Image (cartoon, rainbow, N blue to C red):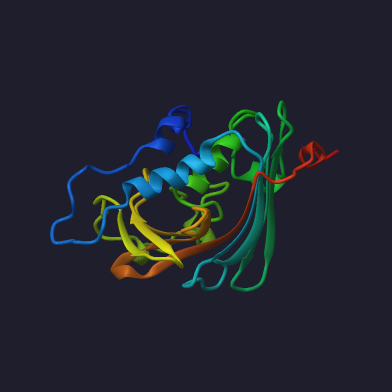
Length: 241
């Protein structure tokens, strides 16, 4: 299993990845929609700067059955320096709920037993970068703390017939761009699914992200409430115990 959201090599190149596109410059054959590289870069620039950020998120697996995760809710806090925190609850289709928590106070990292069991340990300097990367590229709830290629099929995180038969790495393009919404379709490094991202056209803040499976079905969706430059007290990053 991948150890966490990012490997060491991907984590060290985070700053570069946040500010550049992930596809070649040629337009997809037969596609006439406007290109969206600049839109994605502006979104990631908003997230990449030093800032205090509070993000509430909710996720859903529409095709969940039995012991598979069905819904989740959580909060991500990004503070000064390496301060970071994630609190997330995941409920299965049968209603069982599990909490996943991790926090870094700037120098030390604490993980809940459920996170330790997934062998997720990015170190004190890695939690903030991992969460930032997930928000910027592929989403939090389906990847934390498993990594972007979890092998937890027994837990239901992977539906084999939902994986696209061929990975679409064509350049990002706009599905919609008007005064009410900006929706961008793009490929993310290390993710087989195409991603559909909706942002507020006025502020550029995240609204919703969907992972598109085989034949265009939505495999996972995640919605956001973003409080940029939030008033977050250092006390919120206090380690349990």
